[in-house]
Image (tube, rainbow, N blue to C red; front, side, top):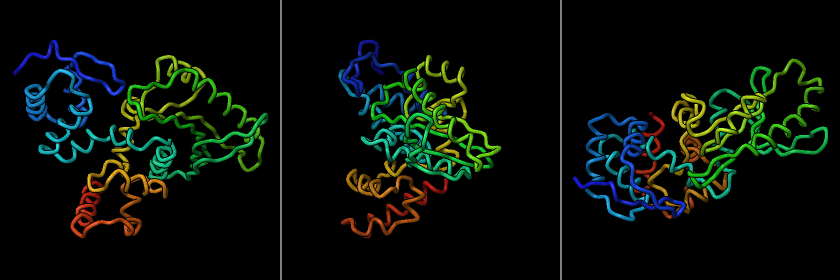
Length: 281
């Protein structure tokens, strides 16, 4: 097994960094791989690794090896990448978040214009249940290295305060409690988290809050984006998402949407089997 001390890998941003085997091990463990599987995959990656390889190629290699060990763990491992492939628009991510909250028995509206005391605002999602209402702003990025800075909770908090100055006076919202939420597929800076805690804003990112982050909710509620599917091309996925079908469950319940695709019976059967496997987790 070769030494990795001097092997530089290429990040998605174009920056180079020294390969850190602990990051690979941690990502495999988070996906559910046991020590034996992790050791096997890490050994294979280290034997294959070369100077200048991209992080995307490392991910693809690890995913392929993990899939040979466990399809479920491979699915979990590929989830973050699948979210990054939902763009460039943030609209599919907003729709996916709405699907999570519907699974949590909320009544959900996406992209809603709301009157504030000073100006009109567009809110990415409103989720309502049992006289509680969540006003949500989504921050989507195709760059997994991007973080949400403190400026975002600063302006989101002011927008929600402006909305609530009107909404809290409306009779139909009597006895309602309101909360603001910022959701992202990446991560928040330390300042963002500190400010949100101070003003009472809720935050949802890939791994925050601990044990109840976006990754946890997606897995627990079985809301997987269609970009995780292997039996659709990227163009097919894009066309489906343009029709507001963003989750595997939605697609399974609306399979006729693929009728216009040039898809052989064998490929269609593979797609159906893949969807059934995902929805059974």
